[in-house]
Amino acid sequence: MSKKRIGILTSGGDCPGLNAVIRGAVKASGQLGYECIGFLKGYEGLYDPVRYINLTPKNTTGTLNQGGTILGSTNKGRFAATVGVADRVEIDPELLAGVKTTIDQLGIEGLICVGGDGSLAVAQQFHEYGIPVVGVPKTIDNDLSATAFTFGFDSAIDCATNALDRLHTTAASHERIMVLEVMGRHAGWIALHAGIAGGGDVILIPEISWTYEDVCHKILDRESNGKRFTLVVVAEGAELPEGGLVGKDQQGAQARLGGIGQVVAMEIEQRLHRETRTSVLGHLQRGGAPTTFDRVLATQYGAHAVRLVTEGRFGEMVCYHPPEIESVPIIEAVNQLRQVDPQGSAVQAARALGVSFGDRPTEDSPFGIRIETSNTATADDVELDAEFTLDLVEAATEEALS
Ligand code: F6P
Image 1: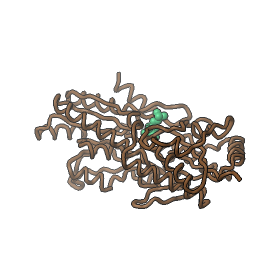
Image 2: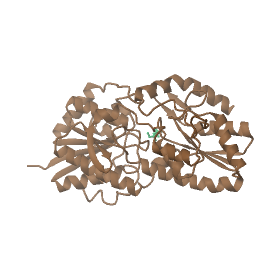
Image 3: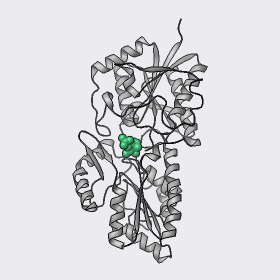
Image 4: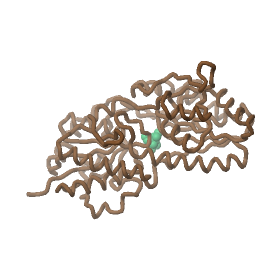
């Protein structure tokens, strides 16, 4: 009789650590007497045409520290289950039936789907259809609820921190204001953590309302203390004080965020007449070797996902509840966006050090807290907001750049 089989695929935007998950799953499967099959280009490889490779400890050797994914990935494609962050779109039943046939014909006991919120929403629909899946959470944004960390996040903040270290010296040499725009979509985790690790002076995130006056106030305050340069870290999804996000509307798909760094820099320059420069880190945050932390996390996720398959715990997603790797129903992870808690200890520690979040301290609130959103926002809330504000955004961007 042929060996039992486990399938694996990587879906959505890539991030460091995907290969470490694959390698972890392949090795763990082998130990338990399973063969491993890797589907190519995400969900696309599951049907019409079916495209896969056999994965073995031999052909995954040396991949632990490789960025990207040896299986390739597709963002959206035919298997989109969401338009916004959590607006459910039903997958074509013909596709679902086709995938089920593939899984049955190849004798796959369970399919490990490695992806972010959109890809896990697809996995959830597979599960509801009766396709045996388990999920592994991936994204540099760290915005999936039900897990303390997604792999890829640590590598992204390492990259952003390194950028801040470099900007620090040139900012000091030229006495300039440096604005660094980082990714993260509607969550400020990358900006917050890199901002703290890289000594940012101002951190602007989606979860805390801010004003240009208060950003400028911080810059002037530093000058009055003899610091003639300032590092500003801005999350791509931070809302402008006048309302709106900066990015491109994509007709029926999620907005592509980006450009706020330039808007903030120009406004600072106009208001303070100080030399200001912008760097947009972009996809550098998604490439390269995973950090040690991400290698360990991704390897554990891969091994634990295999265990879920062998125990028949389908419809579950591995998660990290420090110090343990556990699992939760996939549905719990895709329904809610996990944002930064403005009252959380990381924000408070930064404030205690004098970092500004673009909201000026008041007597009632000496650390300058002005909170208008919370970390309990649902993904729907955020997406509605984004849709509502994109027109304003484009107007704001044009005005700022004209
Ligand atoms: O979700 C990961 C992420 O890198 C976000 O931080 C960013 O907004 C988006 O993906 C970029 O997507 P794309 O690679 O499609 O431009």
